Image 1 (cartoon, rainbow, N blue to C red):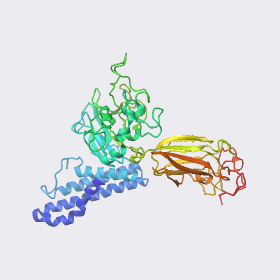
Image 2 (image 1 turned 180 degrees about the vertical axis):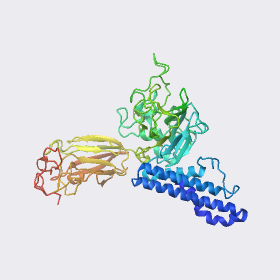
Image 3 (image 1 turned 120 degrees about the vertical axis):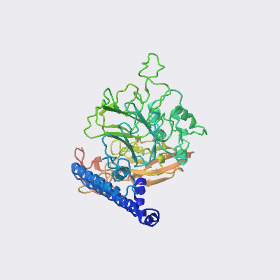
Image 4 (image 1 turned 60 degrees about the vertical axis):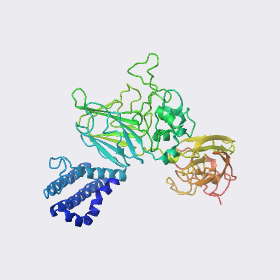
Length: 554
């Protein structure tokens, strides 16, 4: 809202300012300024109405004409206002020359930010312009080893900035312009992230992709590499700084944005042999797999043109998407019509020095680089806390059950992971902070009846697939019940007993025991809901289970 407030404050305050302004300014001057305030407000209103019409389904072609009409009306009125007083009105560069004035650009940028807040959609590409839009929930800082005009730029959430791709617009011509990105953290957030626990990158040797990933065979389940990669500086120097009291720690207010890390976007405008092509690319340096980084230049027989030094970094930390002007006829070696990287193993990005992922577009194409595109947000800082519980889930339900595999328990974690806990005392151990909803999901994999009105239900009560429930686990290993994330079945605690006990510092044991007669109170013959392609479909009688228990429990 920063830009909207900055733009609207003059309108709100203009009446209060008229009296003191008239004491030291001509009536022509104050009249011009007042008209500008109103005229800019009308322009903003016109453009926002066009956005509303597009959201309601107006034909894009008609909507483009409506937006152009807003622009034309603004420019005509703007030039008329300037004629009131050459001395009193700002004679902005570009006024009267056909180019947009700074006020016009401000309105258009504000509309783009409002669009992002309301719909989550980034601005549209503008021919001959590179636009960077921050859809992340954190401020983002730019780093650039190639350009001082890029390096140090900060974008607040839903804010954007633009660079003309032609000469004089701040981008080097026929030479790579490198953008790296990193979220800005406070000291309190830095303490919460606990970068010193990013042990994977503190290992000696070459950096490898798994160090930027969660839950691989090389990393214990429940680690927070995704969080560390987003908020901590991953350079080799910072790996040591994370564990010291250095004045340049790897996050927080003293973060050293040293232009060597961060999701990397590169653009070479007006290049090629005829200076009529733009080249754009992304890079993550992932190599060929989690444990197969790019070839070291020191390796025997290494190609000097296709190798990296041992200090080469993995660059991914902020999700990124790049879209081009419609119909720009760009060439994508990897296929597709846009670029997107939401993890370190991104197939659209350079993974090693000679990986051909460079996109070629005609000069003058418009580009929008969206940080955190769509639903690809930065990981929540709430995923990392001072108390990371080691949680063991033990399934004491009997191995025998009316239904095949019925007494297995599915364990769901907030990161989307799923593991099966076998009956008869089987257990699974995870690590993390599950003190907020959705917490842990526990589901007994039998068929259970329900009297709830489900979306697929067209008649009597039926089987909702599986029972389930979410359990919030406090740092003291206290459980509280919550509904399942998806669907409405018979809650796990209705057909079993779920208890927890603290077994050590930050250690917790959750035990699932039988709760008869309802643990085995499943549908007759383990029949399925009346859904298409189901083998054994339930036909009743309703209200009683296979062991003649009333259902729901009474």
